[in-house]
Image (tube, one colour):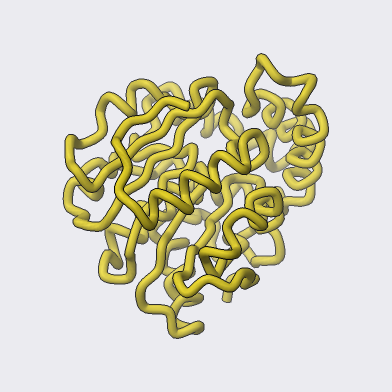
Length: 260
């Protein structure tokens, strides 16, 4: 079973799925702001943190099955699910397979788009360097995920992100990249869900085509989006703002498509 940790005193369970080359420690800045309203369930995804690799190709649907095993183990039947980046892809896979488990779905600096041809080619080309020169791969990529206009202010957070990335099992990272390449467009999942859907995105996110995604979101009253003045890592760049949106939005109705 995947490694997990529970924190918080709220009556409702919020499941937190981290992204690629991350682990459950990434939520530390947001956790104090969320733990009064939610019981937090933080899960290490396969090949990350203290969770074992589960396959040579860890598809998002396969990992979603492992997440469900944790929920079943804890006898949780209705949860709020939030996924950062790759965690968002897995959340979409979970929502497609097990919609009856969900009270809400939050795409946190993530997207329902599949990789385009260029992105797939980049991922495939990265296989060798992840396997043979993982440190170089992490050091080259991590800083680019933060707001380029605030690199000096965010230096400590960038170092933290890099430390976490370097602690990741490189073969786990490789299995995850292979799984991400196989992703399909999940817009139909959003169109079919009747639960609240929250999208929190970054104006300076180099990993997600934020503007295209926001403009492409299904026009439904249960879908809300927020665009923040940050990069790909709102949990480190704007933790209190992200937590405030989550706390409020998962409990109350707000105007849609806000830019903060």
